[in-house]
Every structure is written in C-alpha cells, then in structure tokens.
Length: 390
Ligand code: ADP
Ligand code: MG
Image (tube, rainbow, N blue to C red; front, side, top):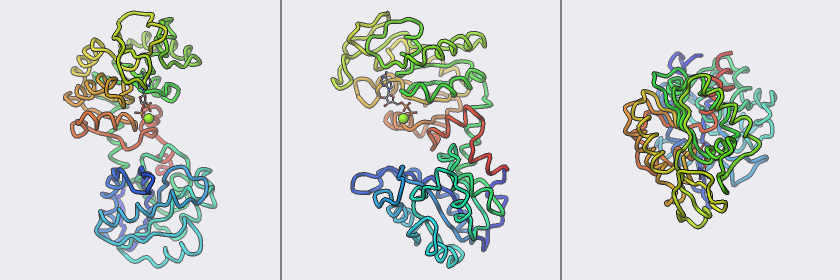
C-alpha cells in the first residue's frame, strides 16, 4: 500500500475520501468536529505541496438529496479551521461539478456534496465511481471510519485512478490497530456494550490473540444466561446462547483467561436511574436487571489491566449514560488510562465513556472508526484498505 508521502502531488488533482460524518443538531449545527480536525493533517499536507483538492464524504444515511444532510456546514467549519476558502459543490457528480473540478487551481479546495445523495454510492456503482474519478490524478483514502464499506467513493474509485494511496489518518489508524492484532503480551481485551451479535466476530478473532478477555455490559448477560444463570430482566440475546457457549469452550481450549462479571449492579428499570441492589449470586430477583459491573469485578478487571502490555477496549461495561450505572465503566476507563500498556479504544459509545471519565488524552489511540476498528481487528484488513493495495 502506498502512503501519501510517497507521492509527488504538485499540480495534481487529488481526490481525498475523508470521513466528515459529524453529528449535527436540529438546527443543522455541528456538535462535534473531531472528525473534521482528524483530517486536517492530510489536507494541510496536500495544500502545502500545491495540489488541487477534491474532498468527498458521506454524512448520515440519506437515500436521496436531502438539505438536512448537506455538507455545507462542514465546508464552513473546514474553511474556519484552515483559514482559507472551501468551495462547496452543489452535487456529487454532473456537469456543474465537472466544471468546478476543471477550474481548480493549485491550493484550491472543492468539497463535493454528500456522496450518499447518489444511490450508486452504497451499491459501489461503477458508473458513479467513474464519474468521481473523472479528471482525478491521485486518490487518497483517509476515511478509515468508512473503509469497512465497499462503497463507490471508498472502493470503486480506487480502481479507476492512475495512483492511489493512504492518507495520514488512515496510516495512523492502521499502525495502531495492527498493535491490537499483533500485540505485545500480555494482551487484554475488554469487551462490553449491547450489540453482542455485531461483536461475535471480534470476540472470536480475539480468542486467537488475547491472553485475557474481560466481558461486561449487556453482553455479559447473554453469556451468563447461556450457562443457565438466572439473570432476571437483564438484556439477553437467546438466539446467541449456542455461539456464547461455543466461545466459552474455545477460550478454555486455547487457554484464554475469559472472565465474566462476578458481581452486578441491579435496577428495576433503567428509567428509574436508581440502584436497587448489588449482588454476587444467582438467580437475580426476577424483576431486576443488571446495568453495571459490581465493585469486585471492577477490582479484578483493573488488576488484570494493570499487568497488561496491550489493552484493546470496545463497549461500555454498563449503562454509563445514567450516572448511577456508570461507576464500573468510569473506573475501568481510569484503570485503562493509568496503565503503562499500549491502550486502544474503538466504538462510538466507548469513546464517549472515556471522554466522560476525562481520560481521553491518556489513551494511546482512540480510533475514529467504530465499526471499522472492530472489523479491522476481526479480519486484519478492510475493503477500503484492500482497494488501495490492489
Ligand atoms: P460501542 O458504541 O462502544 O461499540 P455499543 O453500542 O455496543 O458500544 O454499546 C453501548 C450501549 O450499551 C450503551 O448505550 C450502554 O447503555 C449499553 N449497555 C451497556 N451495558 C448494558 C447493560 N447491562 N444493559 C443494557 N444496556 C447496556
Ligand atoms: Mg454504539
């Protein structure tokens, strides 16, 4: 795979796929510009070397042109951050866009409209890829967070340009996440959150690499219930019991220290926001649900994290959005932050949890891609990365 620094970009038309999928409030204002800032290294590098820049991204999941999903606010914020003009294209492709592309001078920036305004984007439609590649000398993929999708502006376009390479953000993500695939040991993986189904491939991949897997969050209850523990009203996915038991068996065969919580914070309802009791025995009272790991689990997990050389964490260990159920997640966040290990965090809610604990700056790498980081850990590559290699 080529890297942006391997290329001569002067006077070249460079198409950069970025991830500007930022959150907007109902007034259409950007509430968090982290993803825009994360792309600045690549953009400034190219501008400083006299490239003509075309930037493309998706925003949300529109199926057709939708003013509420326009990238216009992003163009304004990017112009502010760069201190220079950003031309906003009225569309993704078409005659007017072609005219704007052809008129670019060295150091100009043209931001295309939301690529998902075009139905061909998510279908990796070759006609759209070809139109995007029109007049482009170099394709740079800097959208790590979108690279698990085989879409026209991520994958298709790579096959239709003379030169392609990874940007700075892409390289940083890949370099760090590789440390979670080929880790310095002991390697501890902390997995929580709600979507057990999505995380099964990651758990299976981690069983091959990790010395220790620490489970929390709602996912723990699927494992515990599969083992016949009474977990009351806790969130469980019964159709995943068989897979859960299989994972436990594999962990044992491989000698992976696979931990489930040993005590639990219970509530009658998440909405109540109050802890009913903390237990370390089963069954739970039938009307209660587990919403956080208990203090004994926190202590055991923190001790294991303290001895690790590499830590990968995805998924909060409880309903951390509710203060009474956030304690376990906050304490594990602090344990990860205090560790001298290489620490890597992926997943939207996990990133929010670490920010809430106030320790984001003490984490070695916070991945900008939630789904993408998990798929990379599971598969060792992503469609958007393969496309740069082909
Ligand atoms: P990420 O975005 O980091 O990948 P997920 O989206 O998988 O994480 O899971 C985050 C969600 O899981 C949070 O909204 C949190 O409230 C929820 N969650 C964590 N533990 C529990 C639990 N015990 N019961 C119900 N929901 C939980
Ligand atoms: Mg999430």
